[in-house]
Image (cartoon, rainbow, N blue to C red; front, side, top):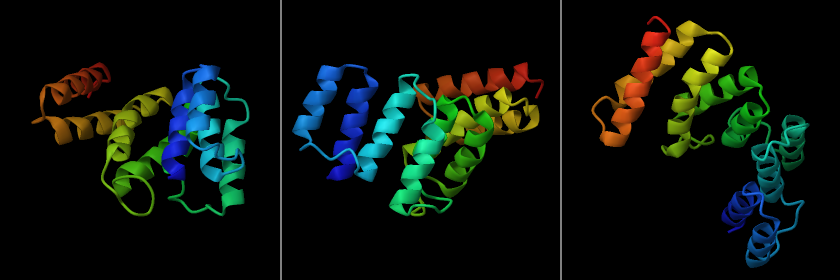
Length: 168
């Protein structure tokens, strides 16, 4: 499907390997660059490679052109582009929506997007100097994962360390 092909193009482009990107594009059936999925992934790939100039406004323009203007539209992409562009203040409310709704979009799907949002909020709040919300975000991680497996325990340990470092 177009979304999965576009994601494959993004992942290839994010490696910075032009030959790999071309190969993936050819195998994906050469989705046109003006397809909204491809356009989104191209913006994400550029931002992930450090070329963030204009990516927020470009993502907004693609959303507008695609008619996707609601609060829940393209949450993950918007949050990542804002964060990679160094705009933590813009990224935070988007991650908050993602964490609150339990996932991507208006469908409320439970998945990696809500986990990603939960993990990102603490560091982003720290970046903008909001210690109280950073502590609350880290405590949320601890609460959710304190009984998890070894991987979760490593995340919980880091969250506890941050709470302590922040005086919580």
